[in-house]
Image (cartoon, rainbow, N blue to C red; front, side, top):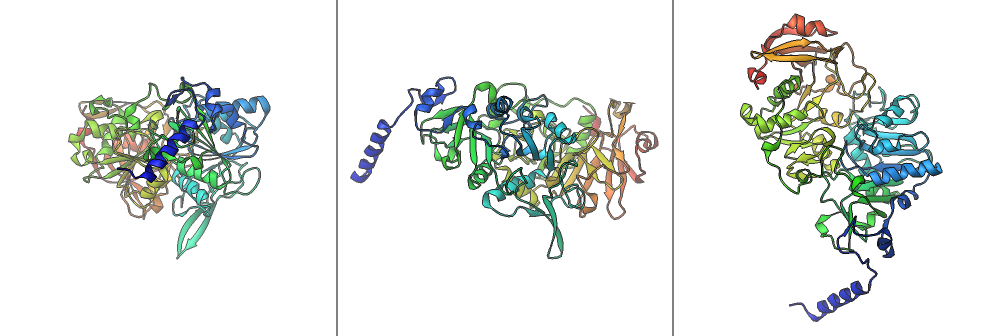
Length: 564
């Protein structure tokens, strides 16, 4: 039984709660159930989106949450744009994000894509926000593209007031200061990456912060974040979110910079009513809470309603995952899946064709028992389950564990990934790969550099040509019905996202629907090692390359790949 002292404390707390100002709304305070003025009557941190963004000053360095199409803070983005349109303030913001959150149709961060409001961006990937991407390509704003994992660690270093990541990640690529240093246009002149030599080895130092329009770097003025539930004190839980990302470090970075932390949520509950283990952002890190309307707080921009299998609320049956249609993308994904050839591998899958490997693990495990035992992961922080694709990329169905992005990057950087399967837009005769800047598109490197430079085995995948390629499978053989307009195997890539010369003897493969290559690092050349059944090497392969690979002992690709 409790002693008298404990009972007196309980009665004191009870009396204090009964005497404290309260809303008349029930607990939890739902979006639809409480008026804003009722919430504001209590001494709490809940404000409207308009009130929150009014605190953002000209020239602020702003970090935002979200990943590809998941976890947008639309209430905050819309309010910020509306304030700028009506008052011409705040101006000249510098925005930092790991991966743009958007739907490629104007939503998400693209709402902020206007001259005057945004002056600079530093990002890992910008592909889901083409308007913002065009501003970079058209030299309208300053821009640095840095490895996603490096940016993740940089945010942690800003919070800790450290000098920034010192790492081998990025050596030999376009972020190396001997190349472009991550600068994306002529307007961008600030050097944020420098070359260092430690114990006789080369490293890159990434400065912890970016130059804004005012003041020194190494600070965050504003963090625009997102959670599920907040209590009136400002504690925030993430129970319906699909990822943690780096929101804890973003909040800490802003807090330790003397900045402002604004968190958008879907509901509010009474003070200190959240279980302590559910709280991801403590109230001491949060300045303002904005309760969003349902339409401005989607789980993701992907079609469909909230999916509890992505947030970990429920587990979806694997048979609900649609099988891949038999086409060039499935052929490539199936060949890559066979490279997961060791029991209980840790695997990372990139965006696009690599996403098909996750589906094949569920549907074709019989073809590769070792692959069936693999644990699939995402750089965003997912362990296990089936990584999601499209606008849900980065999250996962039935995931077994969720960690902050910076922690996953720690694991990746130390060699935790046994096999990575990543896309390729261009490959040159030395085996260098470009995925961040090609044609009229420059989506950025994302986590590609972090992953490809640290994984024990790299499998790069893509169609042999692009732009109109059509193939069919006839009698277990590949038939090229129409060749693509654009060659992918070219003399020299525009810029390097993967530097083959630094692959350090690790197994590396380049897999297409008709041919498989490997690099001869000592010779600086590619070797053709496999072709699909039915493919003529001279007609279907060599005739569509800008360089001549080594052709010695060429095998046929596994015939199981060409079966439904």
